[in-house]
Length: 253
Ligand code: NDP
Ligand code: 8X3
Image (cartoon, rainbow, N blue to C red):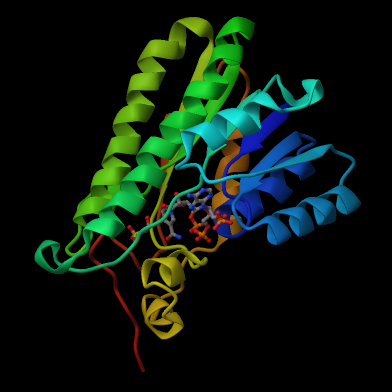
């Protein structure tokens, strides 16, 4: 059986990935900061699927916590075949001159530095074993830049550069590196972005049918079920009503 390590499974894509990979018969290591949710999801997955689930509760922005958690992985979870770097967020949506430096730091520390901390810790055993697959969750924001989103977009452009760089450096070890770049998907993403304002978060999806987390889990399933010799570099997936990062056709009555 293969083992997957998925960051940020307490909601949204990560939660859907955890169930999907368990369904595909992966043992999984699942992470997040909200411990109660993490344990509840892990226990539900154990009750539904005949797989092993190990939980690690830590903040990906804290490199010492990343190191300590991964160092304590039980032997049976140490050979990680698939790393899904999913934990991430947007914080705020305002013009650069009105936006908040703390929000920039949260996004860069989580989306870029957190992804690097985790990857740095997991890649060495992939290199030793000359196999493995890394899937980074990027965004349409890594392809286009939209108004009021410069730093979130910058963080996802960085994810794309890291993805391409990893692919160049790891190809000789037989390690595949992919990314998924979704457009608008209704999860807790917008609630987090608007600092808990549920009305503003809901308004993001007015007049459109957004994607949902299962659509992104379908995309992940497609990538991980290709034959070993096939590497999917990136999949960009939008709702039908979204043409690019800033052109959305809303149907309002
Ligand atoms: P959610 O807010 O629903 O989920 C985010 C997950 O990331 C949570 O499980 C959260 O867990 C975890 N997380 C956030 N910060 C940290 C941290 N510092 N340390 C550890 N875990 C953390 O959002 P989505 O599922 O929508 O987002 C998942 C990824 O997809 C992100 O990288 C996002 O940028 C990207 N994305 C989202 C899109 C969307 O429209 N929804 C579109 C394109 C990309 P906890 O709070 O428990 O730590
Ligand atoms: C999240 C989707 O459109 O807000 O990455 O950039 S979007």
